Image (tube, rainbow, N blue to C red):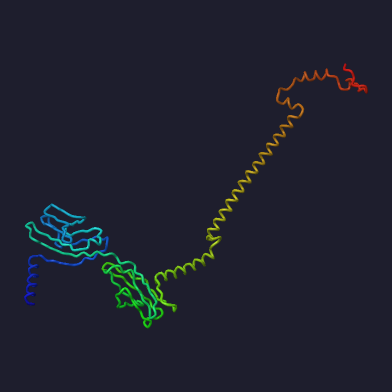
Length: 329
């Protein structure tokens, strides 16, 4: 019975090779968003060749002579390879291609299994202190296609589970642990953590968060020390110095402008007061009114002065009487 089965299998293999119907099956692993070319491997496709591509038994591309029919966004290059742009996880599956000559004879048939995966996420190591040791876990592990591996002090461990238990006898101070998530297209390793357990009881701690907190506290202390040295009134010393210098310069310029304005106003007021005084003095001086008219006739002035009696020749006014004022003359 076994011999007959072997002969039948050998006969089928010989028949496949002799008729040119070689079938190849392999899984093509690609990441989400990549460009995929499922090859036909027959050289350049001839014009008289007929080509058919199927995806999970459904026909997605067909070419018969010059008539081309396609479904979805599948394209074919001049070698007959099926091209898929921006591949997604739902496009994983079985792809089959067949090429026939102009007489309908099968030239080539190929089968490929496409496996589309997402890159693994960034892993995080968490530990929990228990009575007899420490429990470590690697997360997130959200897919069965992702494998886990552990390292202790840089040496790979045989554990492939997401959880790892280390007994107290195996744990020594200073031991570091890390995990790696891996699939067929990517792998990422978590930061090394050093479990530190207190005597107060079991507790769970995110190692990465602890390291970040410790780093942040160190940075804060450094920043505080720098701030004490270089801060003035809550601002950087140099910026505060620039602000104070600029403000003082602005106030100085403003003071100079105000002083110049005050001086000009005082000069203007003095000049105006002086002009008013000169004007009043000129108006009150005898003969000042003749400054605005023509000069009088000299001969007329001399004649008038000659006809006017002198003060010494004029009669004196009568003395007042006790009886009353003198009778008018």
